[in-house]
Length: 435
Image (cartoon, rainbow, N blue to C red; front, side):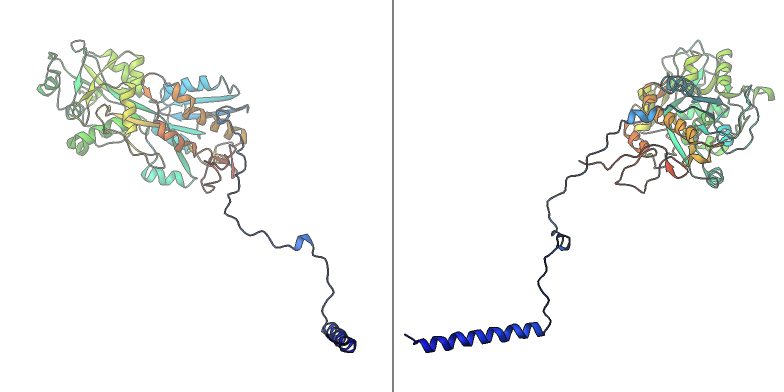
């Protein structure tokens, strides 16, 4: 056991060492201890636990198709779509009574020209308004016409319905009629002049075709082009190389058959209504009109042989089938004649409403005009599809979400452009969707 003297020496040594160490630290400037503030704490380390997404903002998209604004809109164009738009405007006004829409049926080419502000000659008793807020057309802008349109701003083609163009005829001896594409082309080339021609009889073995003159009715070249003529001539150009080479396709085909005013056998009336009336009033006549007008005048029309070899009558389902099986590009500008499918009626086409993406480019622009037009267009691709007049078919259901992207987008694709007015979206945009 150590003695008392040894313990005292050890204690003294430790005390002196501690004092020397404290003096050294003080001399080196070691700061005094300070309290740590909460704000200086490092952030939490990342975690793999997902953060719950914010609640979606409830959006009633039905409200997009109605508005309380007071405004007036003017459009013109397609006679093919005129029955649809007259019906739709009345129905739309039941929920949006202060939006007045005037649609002038002057032909697709006239509508496109009026939309761009190009003066258009009177069509019947209609003096077209120029420029228009929107155009109705069964043929899209393309080629140099599209280039000219784009110099003014970005345009949109919004398909609104699918329609059939029919070969309407007046022949009491044939309550039903079948026509293959090449035979129909030969009729409109003027090569077949009698209804009992062998090629027509071969298409109709169950009917004794009469020895009667065929009176061809073609659409007048008055104006800057017909969408109905475009669809019909495109079909004939697809099924007949001779028609393609001699007449071609377009809104104003270069018909080789003479009109009645030149001493030939063809009649040359203005517009769908004029063609339909000429067929109705002329024994032995055949002409091309949109199905809706043919139905209004209770005209007979032919079943047409499709790509599978079947003769197809243009029911709503068979007309709609043409769009179901077609490739539709992102700008929605396409023709769908002679489509695939056993039940597809082959002489079909979209009808479009054409307008600016930036609606401040409309004549006399205002936010109310933009809101009124966008509400009507949204209504058209939703409620309008359930309220089509006879002779027209709805758009494919798969196409509707793609069309909605012209109106609204979400946070997942903020780069998408929508209808706007002075750079601001016309409709409230949807929040980010979650699964």
